[in-house]
Image (cartoon, rainbow, N blue to C red):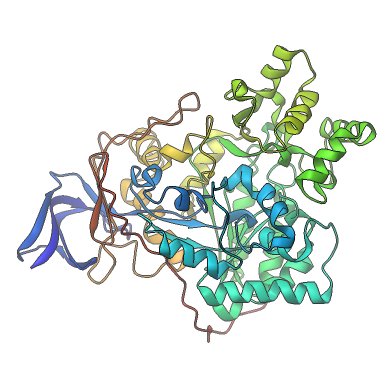
Length: 538
């Protein structure tokens, strides 16, 4: 006898092939039958002609701490998500070394949030063990995050590592890969990641080939420096002989709109040379990050406390103000390309009355220049401010979504206070409502592939992402005609419509918006065996 059968569904198996009518049978968390099921079952779910799909994979999120604070993860399960990949952009809570513990927490808090309890881990393996113990309701996989590694060894020093420091960083990465991490993530927009040269990163990445690990990168610049930044990470991947995944590919700032075409051409040219490169994209034309990201890189040397001291220093404050007001050659000035009117406070602790307001609006309200408003708020909030900034072209977003080598992700932050980016609550229903049903950018089958089998293949998540016998029974049932994201920039904390059932490892987790609190998720570990394949160095 089977555990569960889903009958009368329009099955989209994740391959990209056309849907077909049929049933899905499962037992002990594994799919046993696809198509026709003539075996008795303890439970039968009637899909009533709705879409039966593999559970959605959020291949890029910042839920590293959120999943521990809230193991039920309604935020993602309600969207049909059954698996998340964390540790992105070089930002993660591990490794956590007491010597630099405060620096790490202040570094990651605006992006991944914090916990009301002390972190009980030191290594990436320790963190993964905590996830296993937490009775999570979705599956989770993680990278080793370069920023956290560099802080553990070097703090926020803006200099090359010594030979000993490089050895220590390699050791941390190797231990993380042996524990089951899927690769290394780097965030070259963020300090201290931005202090690393391409040569340093290529040396660190030399650890990855024997574990068949992937390099995921938030590139150094997504505005004026988009093309040089992509060339830089391609060089690193070629030098190291590794696979490359470019995070949230975009062209930031109106003057750069349209340059994603050149970026995609660069990637295609590299693939033609034999390189393994892909990217991901979120289906919105606004991004979200920390307010400190808009400051000059030098101002963040030594971490957030040192940055705040510089803001208090009259001479250095004036230097920051001057640089933020002008285009820069060596770093992307998102203020100039975006404008203070498009920088909106999404999360703030003390001055909550400003949530949902732009820096320009706040400045007009309190009678200060926008840059002084931003700097004074950083001082009042101890540097912990998250923002939403409107800086992308909808046409560019559509172009990247349509590209057959892109994966659709949320890039959702772990900080849920205030007015978070609506992608936190609506990414995956939005993909099907806006880009499939309304705008016809993708077919239904193409969209399912981009959030199921493709990310599973890319991130080596095992037997998931396809509706075939022998695979894990992570399944989402949704109504194609009514699926819709209800989260908006003004009211982002709203669950979507049209998701009927979500099963995680064969157990029903969502039943028509009701979270059944089954806690049936798993910590997904990449294979730890050394890779015997030969890597081509070009």
